[in-house]
Length: 94
Image (cartoon, rainbow, N blue to C red):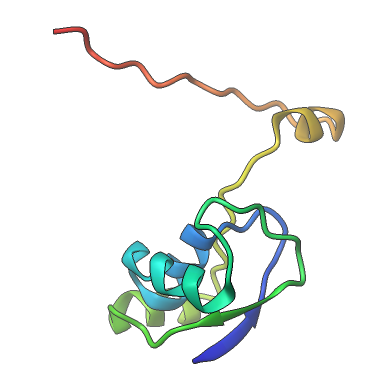
């Protein structure tokens, strides 16, 4: 297992996608790091990362130097002058 240092607004799901090429790696990462898959991760945290599940996807993100960070904090981002629009999930009523 390798280790990476997290950036702001990264979740385990982001890291699993970025480093392992699949979100299914999130469970192994949570166990290896003794955290929940939904925990908020502070920037700079060292996270143990398993071997890639889909090497092509992991290589794509690495080759383009893409860091996935999808977490948002509506209050904090609005205070920083960013306009975010959050749409609630709409479930069809059948």
